[in-house]
Length: 500
Image 1 (cartoon, rainbow, N blue to C red):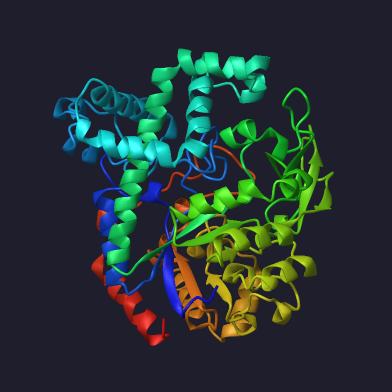
Image 2 (cartoon, helix red, strand yellow):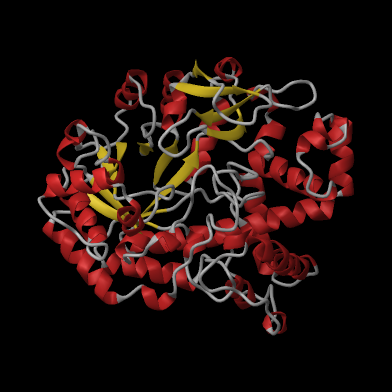
């Protein structure tokens, strides 16, 4: 894929402002698109859009194909007659600057259930033809996902491998019984997905009209507790009880001395090869319905994965096991043509990863916050003069501190290296703007900056701290007044000056 010289902004939709405790796909999403256009940007990068579960991470979703119901614009449902004004009279106390996912789980799901009930009882029947068409078109993943979520709810939220053997192992009689018993719950799940995809399609079309393309993020692995793992058990390494025999993670690195134990099931590449990588072809087809460009998180896992025996307490005692990325991407290319893919090639990158990336001409990534560590930092691949054209450069990503926070917390060697490299002595107030300019001035064809860096925010606005859980991750939101026109004008000037 060849990306023209351009730039964009990283912001997950949950971080958008709005009245109901979390960002939605409505008014404020369109306002952000308008702001991007005013700022001369060409891309809006988001994180995975799937339905999140325990830990609220968008990288651990209940489905690789479904959308997150939390993002559904409730005011649009009111306009379509699916919710009434009285249902908004008494609202929880929402924190405008931070998502409370527990609160959303209770209140928003109740609102969506009411919306479905109103449809089921005959209101908004003008939606029925489109809903029926959606169910037919997406049946390949939607039927399994809706049944999975209905069963999960019926089991009090337990993971699928803790269900009774009949449903755990997808015995036909047990599934037929569940489909009959949970018919209404299944239909409700499908309707909520219909609402999400309907709204996302409208927003994406609006962005396209403004000249903005969406870069979407897909995790290389699926969650252990997902409809993908449950419905495609033969594609992963599971035992007869539905327990994984090995799980995914990364070895000790910049982020953690004990590595990161993700716990995702690992792919059975032999099984995938036998059926022509059909699951991956479907996954990329699904992603192309959501995004213009696909960023693959943890791309190096397509060359080899860090395989950790299950169970384990840390990721230390793992091993690198070869994957079949080359064969898989060839099968996908044969089925779908050349795909617009960005490879997240950060971390422990070996020649086989670089070969896989370059054989398919995928742009890689560079993070400027990683450029100034170590003694002989002049050989660092992420220094601006070492970047390649076929690359996407970031000041930082969702897994990094904000750039202002990074400078505040950087060790003295990193600060010294930066001063030597730039012949400058930035302050905490000026550093984020300087690193942003360095990203835009680089030869990398695409430069992407988190909105937090454009707003010059500190560590309090960090999106995620890898290897940790808790209510500090994935929760940051900005206020509508923070998206100022003068920020857009400054960014547009930088964009035009650097030929982006």
